[in-house]
Image (cartoon, rainbow, N blue to C red; front, side):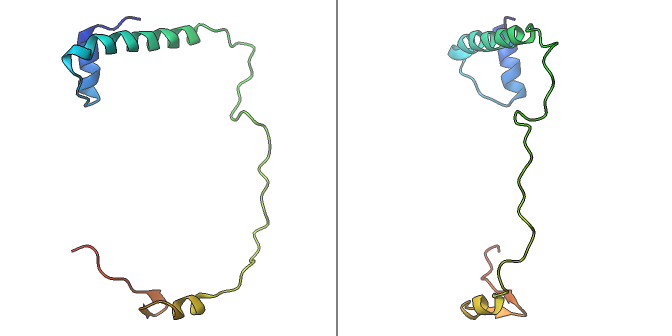
Amino acid sequence: MSLSAAEVNKIAWLARLAIDDDKVEAYAHDLSQILGFVEQLGSVDTGRVAPMAHPLDEAQRLRPDDVTETDQRALFQAHAPLVEAGLYLVPKVIE
């Protein structure tokens, strides 16, 4: 598939991209080569290839959902400069 300079300009406008006028022909050539490669990929016979959702058919090893640490919130909040009702107080950053 071959793209014209007008088509490249339209694609650039739709994508909200600014392309220099002296580079439009180069973009048209490069995009035409990419589209040609996509057409080439589309012509490959994949009828005997089984579809897959993931390249590796392995199960995810999951760890048990067990509590491994004790609650240390009081210890951590003892080091905080400002705490109220179990919450950390921070300075306002948005005016």
